[in-house]
Image (tube, rainbow, N blue to C red):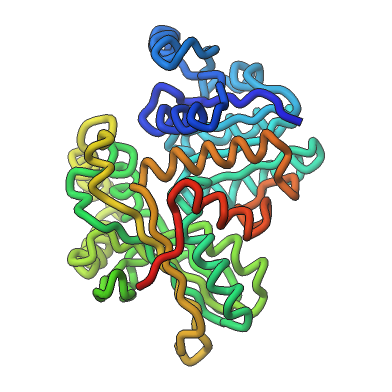
Length: 366
């Protein structure tokens, strides 16, 4: 059942990490992007891979990259701006699809637009299959497997080691933009949008209490569907726990400012300055940090019924490995369902847990 795996955005920071992870799996993908000279150099550097040019603003050029049964892996963002044409191109020809988005609104929208199309063509689409948001989804599913009657689920994303110099340009851009975008949560058995960083929650990580602020995550989309008892699912970011409460104030101020044109321009300017240079941390910098995801399942009185901790490689190393894993599983026909689905819908929970353990994302203690 295997076809061709195409990596769109291969010359970018995350794209190259995904390509290198595929090569370690013995897969030789086709590299794709806008710039022929950069693609040719990268293809040569990586052992003479095939490459093809495509522009994400030209759906026909993307559509020619893949056919039925092929797999399109894309890292080209922001996905709200560039992702829809790529997703449509894959769905329309019956190609499987996986991306690195962290934009929950984009995930909701491609489900609305392309789920039926992908199902008709027998294609599986796996958005947000990187650090955003596989660790939290896996931890949450494992916690709910231990406590199937739980009503509330809180998920926290943390890092061990400093991320001061360890964030990519894309991540900084997403974080800066995200302070003025709504966060989607599952409350009272409904999806609802609230202000990002409008709440904080505290988790125990490696024996220390660490605080995160409220953010969006696809966990709120995929886990309630499999666990009808859930009345609440919320996701928190604790990368900079000492700043979590200050970020709640910053978010409130930024949202007030953006209501006026002059304020919106000021916030946009500050965000631009905060994003820094292109690229991301090198291998040495990535080795200084680990990711840590925790899921806490509770009853209606907030009594903890189950708590799962997962620890693994750095944000970016893990994302590259997860994208490669998803592409290979799709390529070999391992997905259970066509359409736009989440990790636990597409694959057995035991398969995802075992495969993630192979790339270093494993259970750990508090």
